[in-house]
Length: 245
Image (cartoon, rainbow, N blue to C red):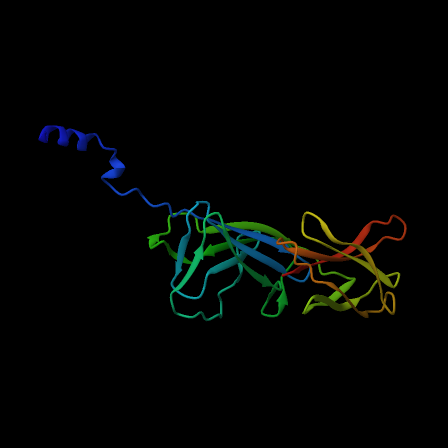
């Protein structure tokens, strides 16, 4: 009887004797939406498993990022000059769910706008552990983006959210005394092309203000685009895009 028990024990699968290694894998990514006056970064932490995971951070800083020019020189770093709460933080990400953070940069360093060209972002998730296990997945994501020349038709654009309305204010220097705007989420138009008039045409700068209902049906980033149309060809010119957080 003793012999039989020993043989059965030896034939048991190994995972009944030793603990199965816990899956702490997560996917870290960065998405970039550049505009003329700035760039918005969306940082995405995805849990690809069915089980929830708890991510631990040593401070209130959940991410950091560095902007580099085409030659690889550091241009800007998010954390420079910032202070973070020195206390452990926990972020729970359930199975097959995503945690997102957003950050905007005005393309300026010490008050001066950077030159046009191609830049890259190197974004790091500042996590210490997942389910009390050391980080084993890639917690650095990179992406490139282009900084365009400043727009000659639109400037000083402000986005104000008032209850269920989005109010857009700014200045326009448009040839015909009017321009167009449209709102989309990367998949569909939420507001079709709409004409907006101003008091004076170019070469004058004219203040404008318009509003539209806040759209809460789309989870994707919404982009409002202001633009003119060429008189002869009807092509879009002087396009100016704004990400609505």
